[in-house]
Image (cartoon, rainbow, N blue to C red; front, top):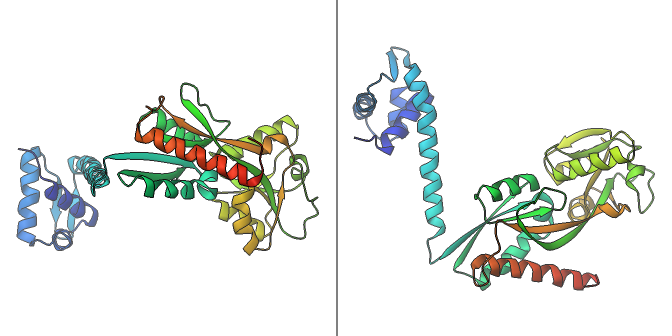
Length: 304
């Protein structure tokens, strides 16, 4: 006989609170009923899970192990419920998209949103991550589409061009920098950047090495807004995608200066594991995103 999920959930609550009464109350059952459920679990697993004392419950070695496994089971059930919800309300397909931080901060959400009304039967699940993480999840089959910036290893994947972004320096008003600045100029100052796992930070470190100059990365944070906050506080100069930086920096009275180096203009890529079939939901999404990119470039006057 397999343990039921309610009993596993009760066990986790009892293990975390170390108190049967509180576990029973949070499960909306009586204390005797909770005690019977836990005793039945011990019978099913043929192992004592708790030491019962006047001061409460203490997990045995078997109980400690079951706590880890039970949390995994319950998390999987919650994930399963969420996945099945995705197919509700008439949805016939679900596409999972992971977009790098730069794309998510600039244009990807709007491009995705404009696709949805045209295809109400396709549910899109969008999440932000670093480019390298998107590639890893794409290869493992966890997602259907990765929106990444050039520079990550995309070998073996199908990649299509998407949008461009221009890197820019974000500086306080008083810092003496030209209107268009080179990366070499920035290396004379303390820098504020994203954490080391980001593609942008690795790109900057690589070009600092090529210039044979140290990069004084004084502060590392996890979001574009946090970079701007640190710059506003006087901790250094930030390097961010220009379009993303402008929205946040303007409210903080920060200067946004395009970086003149050729590599500072970056190509975004749409990556899939295999070639999308011509009539598939994924193919329709790829075509839409590329159309959005072409329209944006035409509006900006970029030659086709």
